[in-house]
Length: 164
Length: 433
Image (tube, rainbow over all chains, first blue to last red; front, side, top):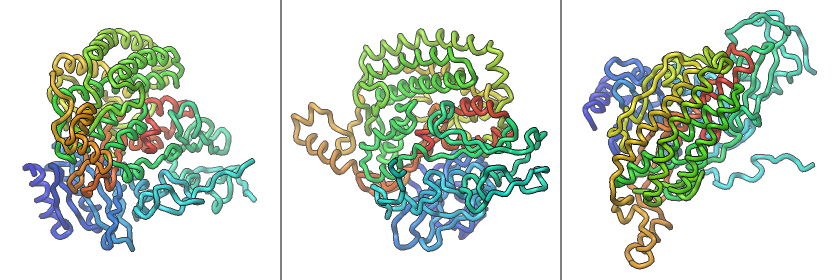
């Protein structure tokens, strides 16, 4: 962890206390795991802090960890133009209640990313202005990137046009 | 039964549009379009607004983009892009293949610059594995990436010019692009779907013949580019259609998630080649091109001038490219050479293991992004220590850039869609994944 990442993590810990569940490091990338209640506040702070602001939300996406506890994860990448630094936030979710508050109020660009996450994993984002499916048809019943969705698809789930 | 009432005042009365199905029967897409807050008001020539479906199969949508438009006469009140017509589920496919097998799929993401995708993906995999390609391979990647950028930008602004009526430039651009593809044919062995990178190296070394071809191309290219520029820069129609069209400010562009030439056209000098250097870009001397207007014309200028910077980088690469191997010496991670597989036992075993089980990366998550010609192209790889990834997320720039379309189109005329869409330069293969 370089000095900048260290100071960022320290100020996140200081500011949000127990909301920061875990900090991990792998190949010089820092992953900060936060609780889902705190994610909007953390995003707002990251965007607005004076020391190292992160004005660009690069990506929001889901991961199916396929574990009994906290099956789903939602990940966020933010980039700081001033410090040339990237930060990776992670929120872990229970399978029974896969919902994270939307950060579209903070980063309008997260709109389509969250739609894509919803489309692929069925994770909902309360507060999202327009949570439709991004890629799959509107009447599609499944969430294709979940690990229990087979690679070959489910027969009959995408009806083909009738022949002549 | 469709109820019909004239919409006298747009803001007071609920808008009822002739010919639309009742509310409960509308699709979510249509409802989202109708629910959009139309904060532009105009004289109402037809006393009715109209819903028009553009695409998904429309020559100017650069593939299969569908845009649902709500029009007031010819003025766009709101627009809703709809994606997914080219969704092939590459992220799902990736979870079921080894790291090497997925390289071929990256070609099909942004099909105008397959080499960039190869490089972006392989850099993420190499970051995960903790290995680095030898210098000659790094230079080759830089060199070929810049050629791919030239080829992609040529299509980008050639097609944009065609969309607004300047057909000649497209043909000239394709003539130059053909030369780039001939170089790829010579160096890679394939013109289009290159799949040229390997973990820890390249498919094969670049020959002197290949380098000479690149040198020959790059020496005549600036002149050809100037010809094209002269054709367009004094074209009144092109100027009038592109200037002040699809304007986006720097703050808006950042907030909506623009990257690449589109962001730089609004005056934000973000270029990962300089800001988060990868490959050998830190040893290259080039300028980050920015414009301040943020309209379609500025985006065209940024692409045009970026190609000249690419020429500079290619020249430097050709000067500096060192001799040496193009494969890292990492026997359990890098595919061995064919002649060694046939003659040595160790290499045969490693080849067998890498092909069948895949390389064995550590568990962890990495994200690596490069500056592709469309913007920031990143791959996020989640590994669980298996030969195939647990999850790959493709951060495709076209997807994020298209997101701004409703904002850019609002208040413009129907025909401006072409100028705006062309200047954003989306590729649906990448946006739909």
